[in-house]
Image (cartoon, rainbow, N blue to C red; front, side, top):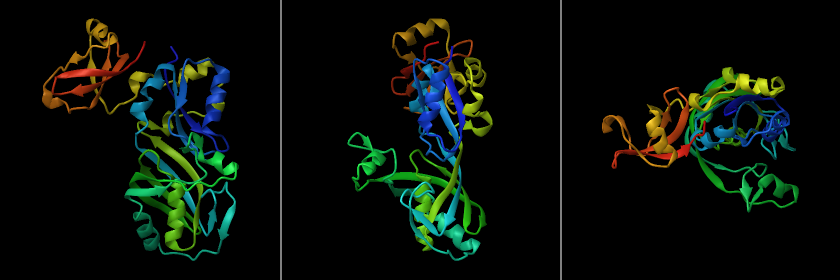
Length: 295
């Protein structure tokens, strides 16, 4: 069965949805979707869920994301990256490393970002960039995100290379824009690569150009049982599988001290196949099914 995830290393100049369209030309899927939109010129990890893998997206989309980003000082654009129209351009001063690092440190932790007008965020059912194309400029909302760490990798004036670990929905190009404002010279996102999404990493990935047939898909497919490695796992026998498929809760096996209320758990069969994702209820000492995976 073609169930699971393809970990695509997206090339620049390609939208996330273009990856989906190219896969659909190769094979017909009951369901297909990706986790975490990458901008057209961003590269790196784009997990694509196939068939039963789509059911696991809600449990994966909040995973930590890691990026390697390059900021260019002295330029601002209306999109906050090099795709947009130039707004300002100056000769930026050279900064000492302490200033660069201290300024970057201001973005670590829980921060509020103003959603850029050129984004796929939907307002009244339509992506913001489509409103802009109609000549309608909307006062975009702020959103709360978290930057777990932001580290200076190098400074080769006017380029600043950083690594960022962050939560779902963080706009790295907004960090670039705000970073430039703090320095007083402006900055733009020059390039961006997503190097990790939850448990998915670049060594697992392949490019869309290397996927030319159904056999290529199968050879790169990560099966459902191999994802969600951070979840505790319960192995159940065939008798209990019948309870699951009827939507009935299972008794919580093992000491209640081993479990945290409301945490998720993977339920697998004797052969290692993923059967379901359940939520632990320590009060009733049971596991209630949230997603059933058909094998």
